[in-house]
Image 1 (cartoon, rainbow, N blue to C red):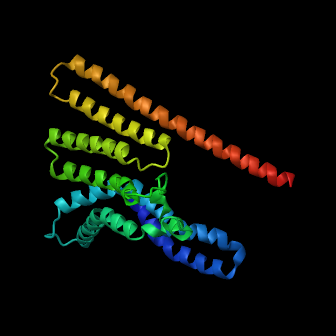
Image 2 (cartoon, helix red, strand yellow):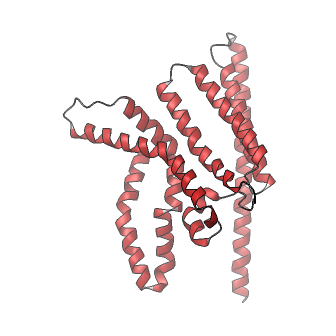
Length: 265
């Protein structure tokens, strides 16, 4: 896993330190806000975000190791690697199921401060005010993990069948567009439009990948499709960079107003 594995090891090694600081924060109230933030990051919000970002790598490399398990050697490092791969594979496969079951069973706590402090990362930008079928919104963040899990399974165990890989990825994008526009799990129309835009971009990219394969014998045509591929991805990146820049500017402006208000008082 490379650098991602070292970050995971650093997280694990930092657990005793965070627990110690959390105990200190209970006795000294002045440092309690800082220790609470570190505790929240380590065990809930921060770790969930880290696992979400690295989920694709965790799934891909663990499945590759599971496919190539070798118990015949005498090296202890290989045996440990095999066990770690099996543990990661089990955890990666059952994590989406755990999220669905856990969140649906605690649906009445979604608006509580304690639940949001611990698990609110997975509920960001979701419409929790639905009266009918509110439980359906949890399938949107779960789809993030399921798509990557299916993608890695196809890559590892179906790596020679290009058209099967592309067909599954296209099917998932179409299913997500239907899900987003039918159930509208996002809390705002803007978020719904952005997610729909993302899926449409993914679908266009998949179609262009088909056009750039050996199914199109004309090299010039494939070169043209490649140029369209670059334009579409550049447009996608440009839209999100602008949105990110606007959000950062708004937060900086808000903090400046708050700071100015405190100084004025």
